[in-house]
Length: 608
Ligand code: AGP
Image (cartoon, rainbow, N blue to C red; front, side, top):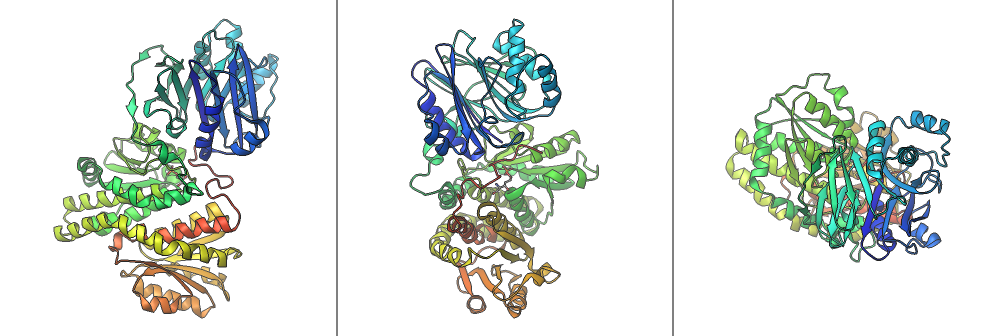
């Protein structure tokens, strides 16, 4: 995915704002950066390969005239990260500038057609066909809005496009979307458009959603939205966003990831305040369905795995967990209107998850979405949506959004149990009370383990490979721990069920080989001790995440992270993952990597 920003204001230069907005959007891609402004009917452009700070140091992105401009941070798909492949892209006469997020599937065919007409291309991108198509339509007498409409009719794929032209007399930005997000922000004498809210959050909390198949024309006075293909004008009220600008700043922390780990207690508290009827409706839909499928990718998939365990153990309902990317292939055409899908995606934009949900909708299955982003694509597909309350998450590695996904799944499990009667009301009350205590427990987990995580990273940072083992609900904990480590410290890590470890992975173990064990004090504990003994017998260096008073495990381990309280078994992932999040953060630092911007990744993956 890429980050897009466009600004049009009555007076003053927009470039310094665009520069800062791009920094706030950088989590969406950091292969290259570009800014274009218009001043006195002339385009000014600065773009290059690299992160925002690097490019700014070379080019000074603030020093560009013009009260209208667009900017872009790129996650490369078509063409290597380079100056020429950086957005914005232009027509032959450098009069039309375009930024784009998405993939145009039929670009080769359109490029050939345009080349035959004499258009000259400078980049390998799919995007560059857009300004050239606009150039053709405008040459044939269309204005910018109509040219964008015509272009949108011909391109196939997914897109969020923001364009401007020196030929338009009044300063205006035109944008449209299909499959990739665009939100509009408004304050007096300034209008913004962006891929995501944090870009303009320091300026305004008033946001208007642009939906697929709509086009918006922005001026400093405001915005006019219309249907892309039939000119119908759309009246849409703005929404007040509760996120604060401070939530999208590092606020004294060296990295967003560390800040977001520390914000987890607050994020859980806010999610526990979700209105009861929202949770109840999800529980009703699940309860009334024949089969339940949880669909998600990456960290959200690990939340689904934990949620599956919560539903089974608390409510007696065992959903299937399927990777959204594989879903149509794994359900073998058996989906019906009696089934219910729980789609979990913090961004609400992950293409694999959106595609699976679209497939499920075609089959008339009921859709519940759990997402952190108001107005995201998944919210428009779902029959019922739960908006988790993590606030904006900027670090590419999901931490606090994972925690709030678990919180909302726990709330649904409790509501579901009331309907199914699987757990008696006294135990349910005990579990609910425990959820209220979790934020304080996690604060304690952070303070007692952060320094230890840094120390352990100092000891293990040269290890080429690490193994993570758990049982039961802790399998999702170790899967998540291994993913975090791979993502940001580029360390090879494998997660396994401790039961399965004997059937192959144990061959990896030799003297000093680090094996992590997640051992809550639940019914898996004694079997986990058996697995620790097996690994120790082969020379493993044992690192365990354990309950505070588990002296036996302290004895058996070379290093321990401790969890201060006895955790309700179904919720153990929420506490036991935290030291491992911290460990992967400090591993990335110790190895000299930026944990907020891991190589090859972007915050949400909007390609199939
Ligand atoms: C998590 O740290 C990763 N960045 C990634 O696995 C992520 O969880 C996955 O891409 C799904 O994203 P989503 O929650 O926005 O759908």
